[in-house]
Length: 392
Image 1 (tube, helix red, strand yellow):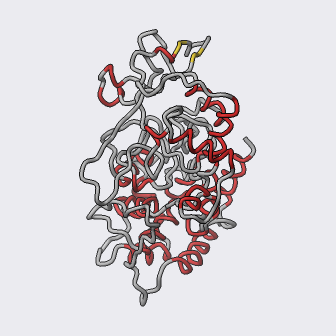
Image 2 (cartoon, one colour):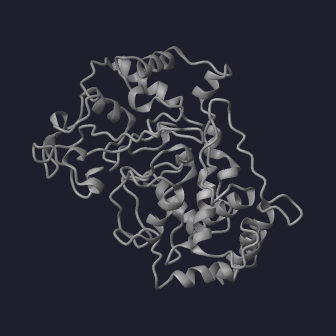
Image 3 (cartoon, rainbow, N blue to C red):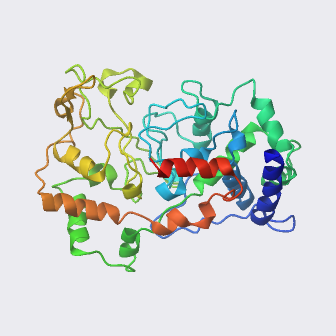
């Protein structure tokens, strides 16, 4: 009964959001502000409105997981700038992942994806991790259920039409390869550029005195936040279609020092997990600070609860864990970045910094129908997931 209701809902949904046969299904416009150049797009996955809308519908559809209990959106909620409010993400079987869910906003402009994988450079490649990963299980797609999952979409008339429009001239457009391409196209088109600070730069809004002082600290040489968060995306791995030399820095910010020799807790040892080079211990990608006020808890493992705690950690030049299995003084971690040093910030200056960080919230983005759940009101499992998170 539930599947019938879902199929009926899909017919109605996709009829609304997918261009008709007479429309230009391949037409796409980035419609970006002047400060943001177009991103790089893989030649084998060009953008189209039909592909973006198909990806959006799949992103929110729990039928994509092996047991039908989780969608991509279960760990990426729009109202939280596509993070999930948990310390670490939880997969479809209830297994915890080791990492905090990163936002997908403006992911198209990131040189590398995830927290610490220099080889993860396309959204298409990144999708394979949550779909097919076994340690931990996220979406739970495997060789035993892959055919069944594809069959779920092949049996749905609305999806058959949507795949045909998104991937014209393909005899069998419904495949995992095209599911990945469609969701990557949706993620590539999830764009946040309407924060109060963006409007301020365009002369359309004013900052308060507290926000202005925070801005000056952020971009000045006292707090020095701009060294790792100075791009238009407020990170330091920004790249676009015209980028010639791609920089991919990773940083140890002094969060742990388990052995006194710089160790981080496994399997969360940053770039070291890929390179096994001791100097890469604890190095992670600096995340974008866009919408940072709604994406807590913070850091790669969600171990810092509030923005106030984040500012305190950086002002201290790292974190001293006094007791327990993670005890150690991260402030003296031998692999810590030279950029992470104690900063003598007064309570007022800390408050000013946080006031500025809150100007990076894009309220329209958090509510935009273009990125919203097309199944809202039709899928009890997604609604239940959001309700559970809101009660945490």
